[in-house]
Amino acid sequence: MSSPSNPRRPRPDGRAPLRAEWDPINSPSATSGDHRNRPPRERVYAKQGRLGRLLRTYGWRAYAVPVLAVLTVVALVLTFGGDTLGTKETTDTSPEGQLSRNPTPGKTIVGAPSKTVPGPVPPAGMLPEGGPFTEKGQGIWHVVPGSTPRIGKQDEGKQQLFTYMIAVEDGVDMGALGGDQPFATMIDRTLADPRSWIHDPAVAFQRIDKGTPTFTISLTSPITTRSACGYTIQLESSCYNGELGRVVLNLARWVRGATAFEGDLTGYRQYAINHEVGHAIGYPQHVPCPAQGALAPIMMQQSFGVKNRDIFDLDKSEGFGNDLACRPNAWVAPVLK
Image (cartoon, rainbow, N blue to C red; front, side, top):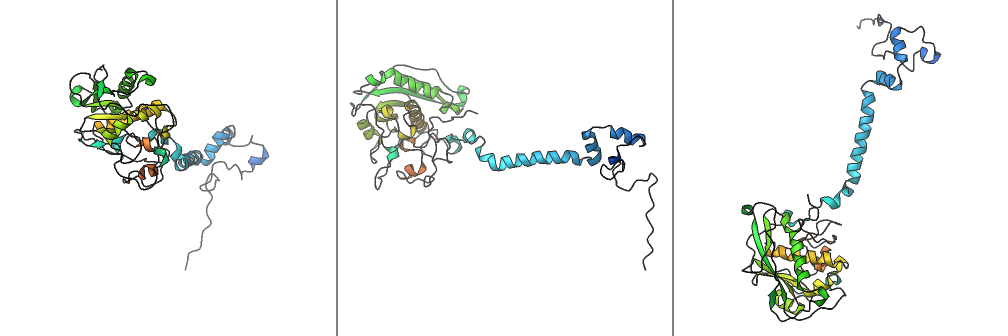
């Protein structure tokens, strides 16, 4: 049998348990406007502003609500807007993140497609319309005089130094290009740019015009290029011929560029230099576009397009069998960190 319940005794101060000191809703004085007879403590409270009354009434909950609201907004931005915040800036297009460099490059031909293509060649790889160029030179090259200091980031003992010469094929008409020196200047400035391969502290360059270089960068007529690089797929291409120790830059591409670069000859020429020199310093592989709208990796075959599907039609390599499309890019490290 349960014991009879005792009525709850009132508190000595007349207040109910767990009740706010002043109830802004149920207090009779809340609507009377008369507070002259309130205890002193309540008169002080009545003189407080809205914020003070809010804090006194709701305590820590008054802080929690706005904080939770801010955190909710931040979470929504990160969830739904994260893909658009800095995507272009943070995409890592440097091949160091995807490839390993061989400090002793091979003696093979690297760069030009080496397999036959069933069906028509994709239009993205075709040579754009443009100015005239020498179709066939004499098959020998002359060195362009000039040298540079060593270019690189770290102490000499921690770098692999690549020396290079610059050459132009005999019989190539350089009049429209301003002669040999503008070609050489473009090479030097591109390789000395901090966005080029010297972005890697392990790489250094130095141009020489005497002795034996690590490789020679040569402007070459299309017919001679086909002999040096191959012409299995009938597209104008450049390459690195390890047997010759020669970076072969196709004159046709130098004059007209590539469709993906939309008439930007300077950007295309910088790309061609960085890409083919990449083969010469130990990056034989080609890489696909990593993400829709990203800058193309420098070791992507951008002469033939910046869509993986276009390149897959030429070379059935792993990673190209999709419809991802990049933006043209001339640099190893287009966004310096």
